[in-house]
Image (cartoon, rainbow over all chains, first blue to last red; front, side, top):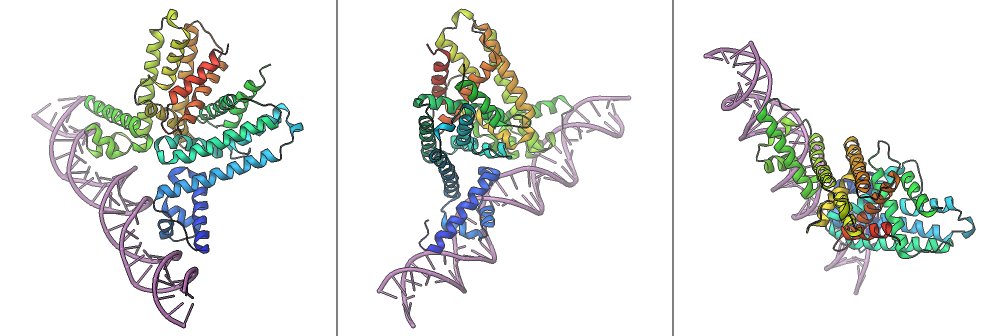
Length: 194
Length: 194
DNA sequence: ACTAATTTGGTACGCTTGTACCAGATTGAG
DNA sequence: CTCAATCTGGTACAAGCGTACCAAATTAGT
């Protein structure tokens, strides 16, 4: 259900943000009515009042999270200076778009990006949303390459994304996973073979 | 706990197989004491008797499933006829090794192979097992390339695997996912670029 | 200000879960 | 055969879950 009053809308939004935060911390299974309500500082019943089912809450959380990522990507595109797109810097930029900005809790943040791809396999209701976000990310990357003076075809974009994604999922099983480093290796090899 | 009597060992094995079958059907979350016991035709308490915790049961199921896959791969390697390794046939062979033999319920079977990679991200206790199985798979693929008269370096094997894996996880969000086709496209392009 | 719509929040229900318990049956060793 | 070790299987429990309910409080429209 959608809120009809401003305060209600704020409350609803608080629930979405709490759910998104739980999603980032513990994955899809961490989004539960009680946990969301507690993190938002609201009573349990507010979650069922504003969302017809838990799935709706999951979708809203995923959308919130994804939109934040896309906004970050667009900001990076806007501030892009074509003169500062040397090989390594550009690779880091691509990694930032695909895996999020580099940080200490790298592996954990990256994990969610792949959990949702795989989770979509068993949750068809996530597909429309995931397709939209995935499409926007591809377009963003396409633009980034063009803006950086290294225009590539859409197929090449897909190939590079697959390369990064494959490197990441295979890196997740290491004792102390460093998916970003694995992706960087693959990207470097594929983008500067000579 | 490990069984001490032959009949006990058979029972334990039946539980492992039941758990593996549930894993294939519904993913990790489908492995639950009651479900495993029911599928094995055994009482609930047998699951806690032979396995100290649910995690142990999950590990055993994953190992059983993975070993079956590796055995299939080794069989394919043994029966490999180097003369029948034309481009397309060879690509299908590689896909069979990485995604399992082609079938109707393709997407579902493939899904599990990637769920476990990602699941390992939040279940560190799966890492040793996953690393061993992943290593064996890489070695298997390395041998396959050599036997087929197309020897490649270990790095190239990793690259091709990443390409396939990335193609698959990105295909999972399609309305009617066909991860094998997506992987095939990527492989074809990368293996016969001219 | 008054009434109807919306929101609130406490509570409860029915279900499933992992795990523990234990009296009795079965098995293997001497 | 005997007896201790192993196994069996029915039952119970506390915790967590999604969801429903509803009287009271708040807000919006007139």
